[in-house]
Length: 228
Image 1 (cartoon, rainbow, N blue to C red):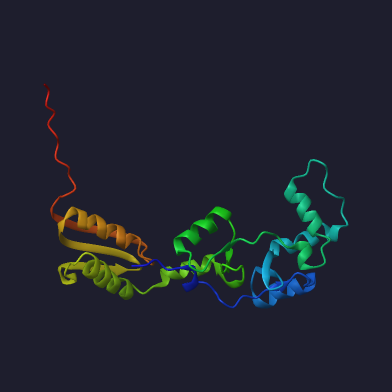
Image 2 (image 1 turned 60 degrees about the horizontal axis):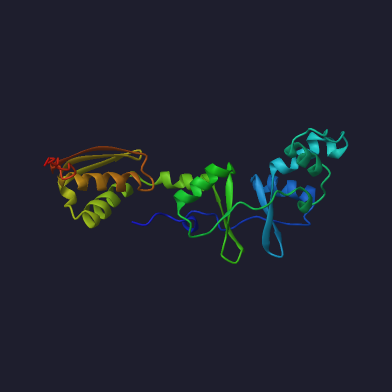
C-alpha cells in the first residue's frame, strides 16, 4: 500500500498575485476568495507569499507614520514596520516560499507544516513552477474516509494480499475511524505487521488490536553460557 502523496490532496487551482499587485488589490484578493494568503509570482514563478499577517502592519504602524522601532527592537518588529509603508506585493511579501514537491508523501508534508508552523505549503514541480497548494485542511481530508472503505481496505489489502490471511477468519470493525481487530493469527510477528500497517493506514484514528497468536515467534530462546 502506497502512502498518499501531496499531488493527490492538494488544491490545483491556486489564486496568486504578481510582484506589482497593489496593496489594495491584495486585500481584495484575500477577502473575495475567503483565503488567508496568496503566492506572489515573478515571471510565473513563486518568489514570496502575502498573508493577512503581512498586510496588518499597515494598520499596526498607521502606514509607517509612527516612529521607527528603536535600536533594540527585534528583527520581526523592524520588518513589520517596513511592511507598513509597502505599496505592492513585492514590498510586503514574505520570502522564501515554503514549498513541497507533488510526489512528497503526505506524512512528510504534515511534518513540514508542523516544523515551520505555516498554514500551507505551495506545491512546485522540479522546475520551480507552481502547480498547487497544500493546506492543513487538505491533509485532514484523509480522516474523512468512510468506515466501510477503511474496513474493505484492511480486509482486502492488509489481511488478504499482504498477510495472505483469509479475511473471513478475522473480525474487522471500524467506527468513526477507530479500528477493532479480533481473531487469531498463526504467529505474533504477523500480528505486529498487521498492527503497524493498520495504524499507518490513512484515515485510521486509532486501533484496538485484540488479535492473538497461535504461537509467539518473537521470543528469542535464552542462550546458555558455557564456562570453560
